[in-house]
Length: 270
Length: 260
Image (cartoon, rainbow over all chains, first blue to last red; front, side):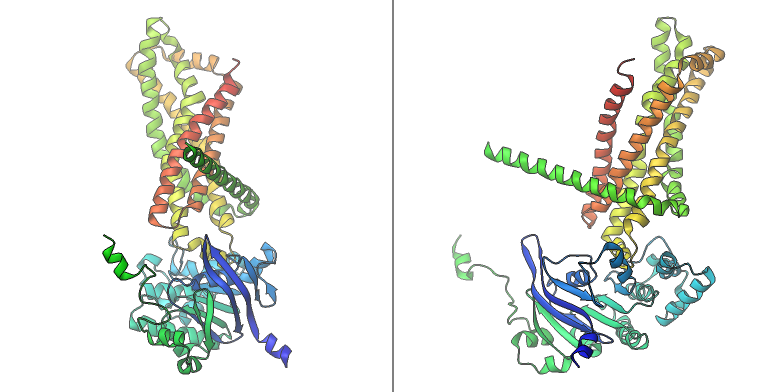
């Protein structure tokens, strides 16, 4: 039974510490990302959520602790093995990170052309299938500069699934989107996760949208996991922190005021 | 006083640290070069943007430099009745010094700055990071083809610069100032030595091509990923390249022609 549970975990984050200069970003983070599920990592801006994705992807190295992806310790394996593993990991950057000097079609074809020797006719079919999945087959000929923010993210999503990965990491997928693009992205993340049997990690601070599709949520603040559970469990939790974040209250465990000396003292000093 | 030494020490350390990082980066580029050679299309497209697009700048500048050399040289040489040596003077100046040095300075301004800005912006817009996550090594896919293209293009551009400059000298010397056409070419043929002048000039342009492109790709890759960071990196490329070209030119000239 234990083995079965172990096997259902795709990513194990254990006691991860990470600092940037003298600033401590993570102070012992533990997480389990279940296979086939949509797991959300939520927290206020500046808590290092994107950094966490980069640590999971092996782009940053923690000062302490380990990250295991599909049974491999991502920071202990060789460069070549890391690149092999990354072929199975898709990542959607906040900006889309599309290559700006080639078309939408070539962007989606990029990983296929780099990693396979498929004939061009097959690449064309695969690219059109991926673009169809995100609803942008008609935009194949556009340049990235001609796309809206939401469209760019959908193209990046098509590119992320072009090698049929086992997992996708979404970095703030909803930020700066209008309600329609937001709705489209929310639906796509859930739909692709289920249709392609993916494992999805969504980093976000958009509570409503993320909770609508997440199977499990981790709340991160001040370098630690401060709450976890299904969206329903978190909504009912009595943690002050979870309540402040989920309900968007201006003051609470995360104070409204940036730390400063006493107000009166500051006023009478001059 | 102590503060002064402290600052001096800190800035020396930071320069050494950057130099170390640049050297490791260069080693990574070298390791990636085989992967570029098996995909020559990547190299050709970069040779177009780094080399071919610098062509008109090099041709026009070379022409003017050659013409000015002939004008200035003529007035000095004619004092000694040695106008016949004009061809030798123009060719030797261009092939040994001005061709490699001026072409490299122009190359740093035109192609070097463009390389830094392009790679820096790719970093700022997370394109390099995105590539890493697609299991594509940005050093092999983006940096190495650009480096190799710069290394190959620079000697070709310097050669074109010198050739066009010699033609510019011919137009002014023979066409305008009326020196003997046969003398212009035959003196040049007799006095310009293939090994001493042409090969050494070529070696200089290869060294300048290497240093300019190395600085350009490193600055781009190392840029702080903001608009300000990319703009500073682009400026640094041009300034550091100019210093490096002139300093290396002095060292190479001393080594090559010091005992002649």
